[in-house]
Length: 470
Image 1 (cartoon, rainbow, N blue to C red):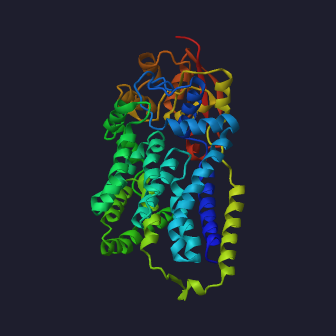
Image 2 (cartoon, helix red, strand yellow):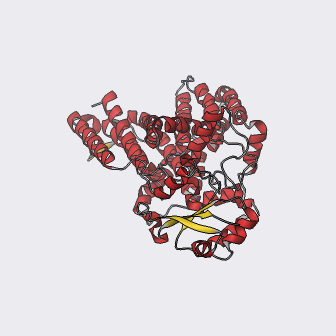
Image 3 (cartoon, rainbow, N blue to C red):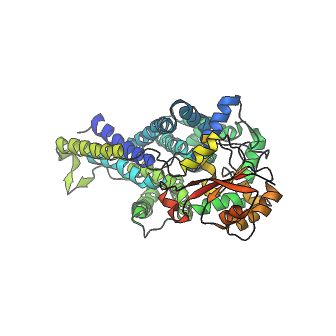
């Protein structure tokens, strides 16, 4: 089964794996910020350069490096709601799977099927509806363009450089595009340097082509090493290789370092070797860098494997095409069947409490941070801004932590830092709840059992308190 059929089935298997993984994530976390940004832009007709969603950071200068992704998912959300966000991201996943399948075409029908599926499986733990999904496909496209250039095909290098305009406005990882070009140029011959010099220059210039301009670019770069961003990276700590979910990652890492590095050295592809080692170090530091390593292994690994791979000591060319077709069909049916049974963006937070806040047009809500970033698509302005973590540098942050641990009264905190707060959303088993229940200035108006959120079941029910006095 050589030719387009095995290639299409391999890409399909990879796509179904990625789509199924994304469907289990749930509509929670930072995707709410993206949707809210997009809805705001659609409503007002321009990209804001100051924070407007958060009470705690309102008016602070902000260069949003992800506004284009927010506009994209916001448009889908306005049209079809949460399912629209999911449907809008499926083409991105399909293109990623397609790019994963391209390098395996030289390996024969079985590996053409299994290669993109195996690569997709390693990406399962990091599938979430966030702008990095755009960066995955753009990073893979950059690697594809370099591979085509090495084979003498220059048609892809300029389109890859131009994707910097999209990447710069969709995700902060856009710096990876000029980095890939720079590494290739550094180890290329004189002719290769001439071909790559201007696409590299364009990719660098495009880093500043966004609403914040050069000032926004320098502002974002100045925050790369901030405590807030370091905290976000460290939150996605090094992979736990004792966990079964991390075993494919460990196997891929060992494959890359033990098998691929010698091949890269023999072929003198030092650009790939540096990129591979850098990605491996980044992944060992924090798993949020894992997808870039896996994409690199999938895109480059297939280029360095022997042409006549065998399974069970039988050359692939001699294997029956019917078995390849059957394997692809069975995998597709099994994965699609599992996908249909899985909830798409299930509700995992106190939706009854959200409904109450929406119906009362609540705006200034002081809330527990872990659910702060999920309120905004429902029309509620949250207290904390989890978008760039600059609030970690604000003077009120240590007091906020003290309130969470019961070391400082919430009443003292609100009087000092947020006197306009009208509502509090917090979990019941907390010092905050005890203080508010005892205060005549606040009354509990709703208790939400939140049985749909097993992740935070130990915290118990949530409640809403409304200010009724001073």
